[in-house]
Amino acid sequence: MKKIETKIDIKKIKKILIANRGEIALRIIQTAKLMGIKTVTIYTEEEKALPHCTAGDEAYCLGSGALKETYLNQEKIIEIARSCGADAVHPGYGFLSEKSSFAKLVGASGLIFIGPSPESIDLMGDKKSSKIKIQELGVPSIPGYHGDNQEISHLIKEAKRIGFPVLIKASAGGGGKGMRIVNMESEFKQALEGAKREAQNSFGDDTVLLEKYITSPRHIEIQVMSDKHGNHFHLFERECSIQRRYQKIVEESPSLAVTPEMRAKMVAAAVKITSGINYIGAGTIELILDTDGEFYFLEMNTRLQVEHPVTEMVTGLDLVRLQILVAQGEILPFKQEDLKQTGHAIEVRLYAEDPDNDFLPSIGTIKKIGTTSLPHTRLDCGYVDGNEVTISFDPMLAKLISWGETRNLAADKLILALNEVVFIGVKTNRDYLKRILSLSEYRHGFTFTNFVKTYEDKLRPKKKSKEEIALAIAAALFNSKINGHEALGAQGEIKKSIDVWASLSGFRNI
Ligand code: ADP
Image 1 (cartoon, rainbow, N blue to C red):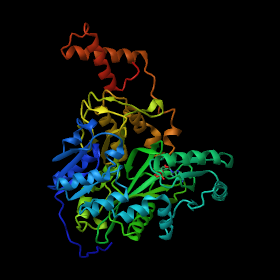
Image 2: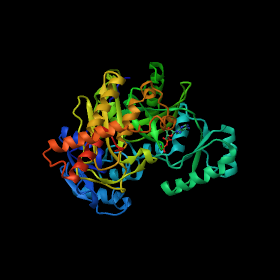
Image 3: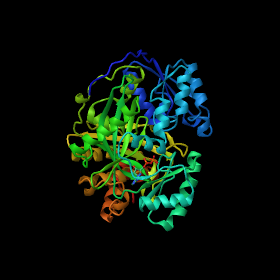
Image 4: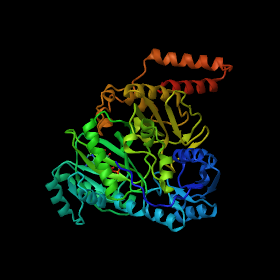
């Protein structure tokens, strides 16, 4: 691709307010530090002990209360940014990152929004308008209905035209909310009511659209990056098919299912979209890949993605740095042909949840978090020992990422790293993630979006034999003795040691 150079003033950013929390706030601070940029973080009363409160150069308390009073309070956040002399705002992901009104307010306050224009957010943030635009651009999208007529009789007629199974989706949706699979006409009415109710509660808008439900698809997404000078790049694909409750838990790059020919078509479609809408900054074009190798546009996320580290690992690029360069008005410092996908990277999302109990979120005090000591592994974590995990925020504790020359090496290394990263004190999906990475179906790349359901039985924890339990207790006793405790007399210490050892070794049923 030829690089376009235009006249845009470069305005160096000196201080960024991060309108976010947890691991992504720490991630942005890391790059800002490397670039000599000061950072300002925000936090709520209950978060005072979390590391993002002290990791930046300044921090301001948002008070307490509902999210709309804190992380979603646009005026309060802009007021903090202006009064502390920040010249840019990074929204991270979630919260206000895809709210065009926030991007607009940041700009109107004389600050730089590190992200796309409000117009792009509006256009692509709505599943309906984005699908209409995508069709105009000639990129394949899933057959469906996204019209204004929301009469049930009309929607049933459209569902029959599309052909069952169909998927009902909230037009303003996100996070899998307001989605229902309908296998036959008789199920439609009830599913529609459920989807509309959930959409109204979550987004304040109950408009739905219908899509053909693709059976056994894969979720493939293309990372894109564009500057203000009309240069549009792709940073290859990620596969994020392994999901629970429509939310990703394992992501990787490259995808085993994508051949060089398919990749060429997918990235061309992605760049057609970004150049067709004059996009600026980082974004992700999500695609659904069916079992015939055909792909369809799903949606575009107009922000940095949770799973961006796998792209960073295989390309060697720092995506936050690129976002900042773009926001400053600079020309992206490479050509498309310079970019390569090297080796294989896998990310797992560590959640405070119970996979053995329908992934129910868990809470508690984190007594100990391990760290990863292996080369080419990375732990992006928003907590330190002693922090509380509450129900106030998303239960994601951390992301663990590994890189290897091959996919198997990356997966093996990630299992070892998961042994080191523990999160003692809260129930997590750590052992569940290890079981996914070890499963031969995973190793063979049978990674469809129904993976978790399909291999439900194989992913259940194995019952420990009596010998294994005895061995675990013996090791725990030995451990407490060599730690200088009066092991046999101190019941509490023994129990603690057993807990620690059990957690370290994956022995949870003792
Ligand atoms: P949200 O914005 O709520 O996350 P998406 O439209 O991105 O919803 O879909 C989330 C996930 O649901 C996708 O990754 C995919 O696994 C599944 N999905 C979405 N649309 C379809 C479809 N038409 N057919 C099959 N699966 C789908």
